[in-house]
Each structure stands twice: as structure tokens, then as C-alpha cells.
Length: 265
Image (tube, rainbow, N blue to C red; front, side, top):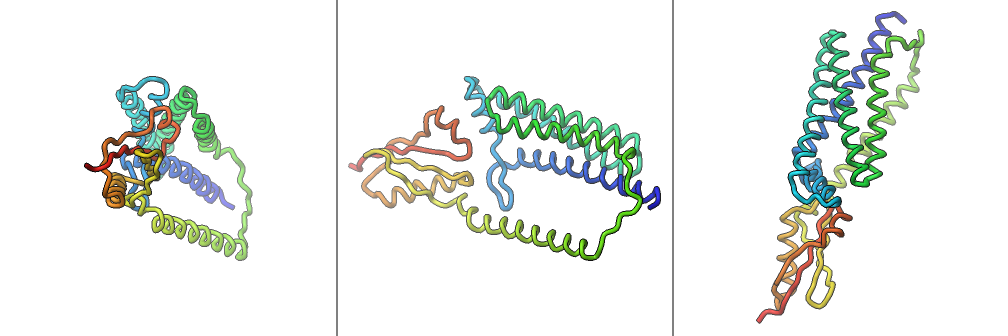
């Protein structure tokens, strides 16, 4: 195997690393821009999530959540920009600039996950702390591999049999088919939750509860109230309120509302 072939293979690994981090931060930025549930994409309401975090430690003013999200979004956008710059310089064979841009992108990535990890520790979210800690080390490992790959010896002879290639293609097609089918099935069975009326559960004689699923939107809220009034023509809604704050903090993916009713006069 020639030196040119080795160089091409090592550059291919660099492409994989840069494309991975570029897509990673691109999707994170899109997730913050696109809130709520849309066709084939469900964006998390990050403002509501971060606001609940600060509420849990007594900082109820939304400005704290705004500041945290601005810092987070800035770090992610800068990381994305520098990884895209590194990809451009890798394509144009500018090794010096490519290495510099990639280094800055990794630094922003490490800073982002460090910022996330500090927040996870402050808010007591240890599951997220484990996830962000793992990504921190993966980013560091990416830099080590990216810069050291030229010194890694590659085997002089690598051969792939026809059977191995066919097995690889079959497994790839199978996984792609199963994944695509599950996405379309979920869209068919669950996307209706955005607008579908939710069943109302009676709590006391004059109090009812509605637990909305994660995908539910404002239309689901309106339809639920309309259905409830249609099924109970002798009642009128006197008050609507959410669960107390400590209970809301424990359920971050869906909304619970309570309805107080009185008999129509």
C-alpha cells in the first residue's frame, strides 16, 4: 500500500471527525431555534427547561435563563463555525489553517461541556452530568486522534472479501430500513398528539386534571377544553391553574393543568 493511500485513509478519518462535530453542533443549534414538535423533528423548549432549573434554586427571574441560553448558544455557534472552517481548509488541503481552526473548535466544545457540567452539578442533574462529562472526554480524544493520526502505523495490506462487503451492505440496509420505519411509525401514531384532545381525570367533586403528553401543543389544550365542556354541558369552568411549582419541576416534558368547575345557573 502506497504512502498516498495511507494519506488518503488518514484524511478520511479526519473528515469523519470534523463532519461528526459539525453535525453535532448544527443539530444542537437547530434544536434551540426550532421549539416544539414539527414534522420529523421535535425541538425541546430549552428556555422552559433552563427556567425550571433556575426556579429550583430560587432564581425565578427569567433573565437568568436568558443569560444562560445566550452563553450556551454563543459557545455552540462558535464551535460550529470553527468546525466548518476546519472542514473547508481540510478540503482545500491547507493543513496549517485546518489544524488551527479544528483546535479552536475543540476548545469551544470543551468550554461548552464544561459550562454544561457546572450547571448540571449546581442543579443536581447527575444524568446530564454523566452525559456531558463523556462528551468532554470524547472531544478531547477527537483532538488527540486528529493530531496524532499521522504517527499511527497503518497495515500495509488490507483486504475486504466479497462476503464481508455483502454482509456489511445487508446490515446497513437492514438498520436503515428499521430506523426509517420506526420514525414513520412514530410520526403516524404519535404526531396526532399535537392537536388531539386529552382525556380529563376527575380529582375531586369540582376539580379535574389534564396531563398533556410531551408533543401536545396549544391546539391540544383548546380541543381538550372543548371536549370536556361538550361532555359536561351542565358545568362551567371557574378556574384553570397548573400544579404547584415543586411538582412542576419534577415533570419537565409535559404540562399538567387543573380545572375547577361550578354548576351552570
